[in-house]
Length: 332
Image (cartoon, rainbow, N blue to C red; front, side):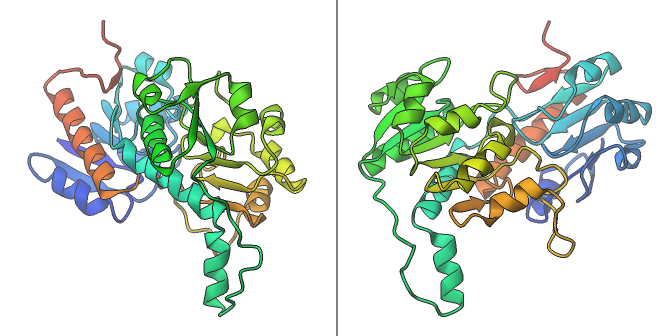
């Protein structure tokens, strides 16, 4: 079967090629799928996409016209895909329902620790042989109150690490996780979590009800010296409100692996031309902010599991099978 993969990172490419070398003809592209690049898929029955690809109704229509039958997305999230349009066009859509939650949870803690101990500023100073400690004082994580918004698989992993540091754990979710309760987590209202937590980490999916979950009102409830981490989806945070909060001198640290307008910016080299997103430019300028480019999932373990699941999705489609990864058509 001929497969075209969009948005393939350089480190990912050899793993993807090796996984598909038996029985499939794979072509990989570094470019992301959108209306301009959709014609490249003409004649390919199977596509593999990343979460930063644009699969709206227009793009899906172009793909269907070109003969595409299956889109196997290499991610858990699928908010970039118009599932209703896909169903109307008769396309099959599959995703990766599970990969290492440790990858994302560990990266979230990497961000939290880095902004708490001012590691970016310290590293930059050291490169200039400036070894002063002025402005680099952090706080002990031990004894902090840590709020986990979303206590599914990734949130649970984040909480386990937090418990290892010796923190008080607060949780908020639509359903409680017994494993988190065993760690000593106490479930509270979102308002109490925001008000009491020294460090808050977001681990919920992006849905209409969670869009801008952290808005101006939520930020106002947080402690002035709180740390906010988001390694889930950019749309959970109202970035303009966050910039305004930082401008007033509030929040001790912000670690973001995602950004609500990251499409067309993240995964690209913009070092020469710069960016025209004033909000992102302002956000990055704050010394207590650390932004990474949606790389929380990017470990050899997690990427290997994503690729294995993608191969299985293709093989299931070829055999006429559906699985828990199949989003369209829905199981009858």
